Image (cartoon, rainbow, N blue to C red):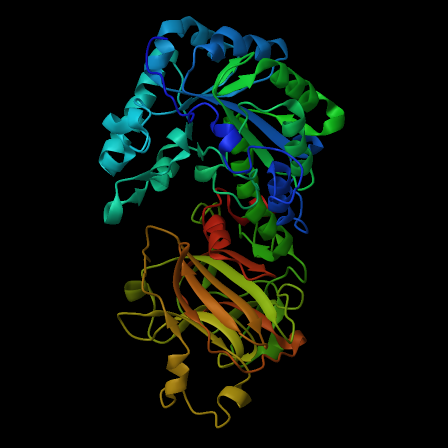
Length: 555
């Protein structure tokens, strides 16, 4: 064969002498677990977890992959695959494609995936044939250059972009001794997936690292051996990625065509519930599902949202959607339905996504929504999240005094309350405050200026990206209020600013008196006020921050 020949197999007879492991299937014997045993043991770890939801209700996934661009892959293998319209992933070395390049072009035209397998197939120098390209002698810069050059050559020869990668000899390191490094992060940067070799378990889609897909050897196996793997994978919804080399009737490092034909028929039988797909197809599906899963958590936990695009009422509310106006913070008993504050305007085209509230000056009148059901309050172990967008220049827009863009409480700022505020003097600090029952944390009701504990409980933002020209996203995510381990996390533009984990006191509300106050002493724009019934994770906060059309996407 012209081009590179890679003798990744060990000497003849090695398989008979190798320890029983994942790629040799047999019964459980006194000598230890065979492949079946390892597969079942590995998949048993996943028992009790929800089975991953594959397309069309499939129970497991199978990907057929082949390495090195061996000639038999296109002179014999693709004909069989095409007979059944089964698609495979081929990890190629560009130079090895050239003697039968037309065959590889036909494979691409028929829908097979082409992946990257480096220019020179470097492996450990313990293989004598790899001494001139030993991974021990590679640097990260050299590996990056080679992987990039491989993609360029694949593009030039076949006109496709290689999105998937297979580690040569299944080895994921470069360098030696103290200078040894994993190049998995590089693969994660350059490709959507990286596949290993001679691994001992299928891939668990809800947990796996796409840059470290397991690859199970298909060379030398018979159909019953592989079927047993698939049957075990079906119990937990796992993804089996088979890795082979030659595709022929017999020979060393060969996936036999008769076995492959039986396997394809089995996988394509609807009764067996197997999705047969390329690595790229499966990876794309998993990435999409992983993005949707956090979104599902946001959707199910949303309790309140006011976009202000259509007025003052909330667009989505588990409770009363209406806004209320009180003549002053100390005259809440005189509150009336509707927006009646003369210092606040509803302004079109100024909002984050549409309209917004504009607080044009500091005013005595206060606006609020009722908390009942809009805030998923519970007396013990209360979880939730507050989200809103602000646009202002604090030093130039705010008038003297403290300012709370949002405050949620049934009494006052220091008694079972959650809020964010700007301090009273320039330069203004922006802070998060979460306080339980006043009579517990401050029984003598000492004023904040005389009480160090008050300021010690606040979390000040280290990043203040506020301006009149851009919107800033603010989130308070709290958990277990009124219970053990109560804490609150403070985020700006998806970045954690700090955590308050000293909230040991109860959090007692008269829920009918509790209110979501908006814009206390505030001057500037407010938009997209939302409440959630769960404590959003950092990933979910960043997802919320990045929603293209705002919270409305959730309902």
